[in-house]
Amino acid sequence: MDAAVDAGTGQFELTEEQRAIQEMAEAFAADRVAPNALDWDRAKHFPADVIRETGPLGLGGIYVKDDVGGSALGRLDAVLIFEALARADPAFSSFISIHN
Image (cartoon, rainbow, N blue to C red; front, top):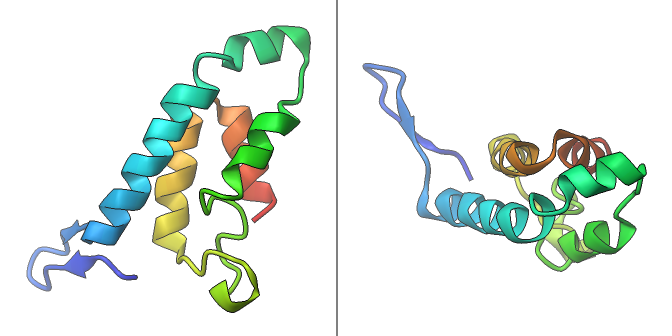
């Protein structure tokens, strides 16, 4: 879903759906990723268990049509997700981004 753009200024506002996606991604990142990121890095651990948790939240298959199990989201939606995850752990966000 596209954000609302002011034709005069070029400024845009997120839709309610986009704000909900952003808030969900931020909450997941704060609860499941950020508290563990340094430990994962130090231990050279790949958090496959936490990666698996992203699927049911719609953070996997972002660009895949919903009729085949994806989230059917757009590029801006994806950026909101990747940005939220990157604040918690850039490596985690990169993995999700690359595999979408």
